Image (cartoon, rainbow, N blue to C red; front, side):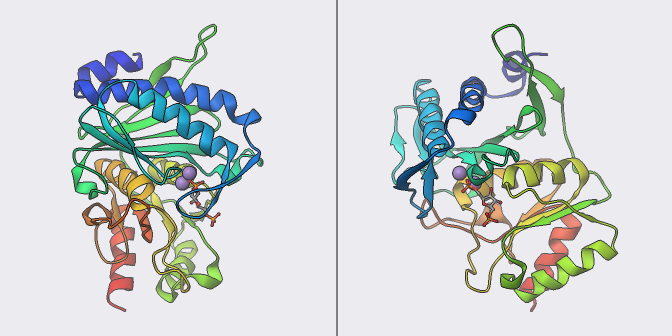
Length: 297
Ligand code: AHG
Ligand code: MN
Ligand code: MN
């Protein structure tokens, strides 16, 4: 089944149009990657140097989303202020996740959250979320509140339409993989102790340095991904609006749980657009165990 047909049957009309616009734009982003890896001099609101691909993908997705006439605003990790438009859905996006991995050809991605209220908003206001992986395959994984579904881009002559790959994806019962970002020497002690315990419990260390790629394998294999609280940076690195909440929404739809170390990521009311949070996401039992270790320390 083609993406637009599935969306017409399984998503609210406006969100279906937005997902379809993102799907088309994602192929333009993917096609551009080999040509857009140079560094630009600008920095983004988080103070990170912007790579050409961050800015290019941001502009491609802002155009694709605002030209639908369905979005009230598009907030992006790469823009200080949201792009305003005249629709009703507030979109928050990380247009290119893992851009530092482009030169090494590691998986990279794009993350989108569709909010019902003005940004910054809590994850509880999400109407849906979607992430693109640009890796061995280009896939769209999304949920609009009725399960997690996946489509894959397949070449058809000069175009790359998206075909159905799986519906109602769920985290497997048995957790198999784990991946923790940041430097081990900087993790808070409860995270270090928990990480040490995982190999003895039969889990395998699988970390690629891109949140989307690292989470995508947790969804497939079960387990936990984290970009944890750091001794020098208790608020972690990943942005609540653009990265943590949309992925926590999908993860929860797949039967998992995502925590900031004290409670559900989806309950965070971000103070600002670029607020960050420690993130522990994946199989519910594992994440609740780590949350308990951290919150009762
Ligand atoms: P982005 O490229 O959107 O800034 O995101 C990169 C993030 C995330 O993808 C990954 O988990 C994390 O940065 C890795 O951080 P370190 O390079 O500090 O390990
Ligand atoms: Mn990112
Ligand atoms: Mn990014």
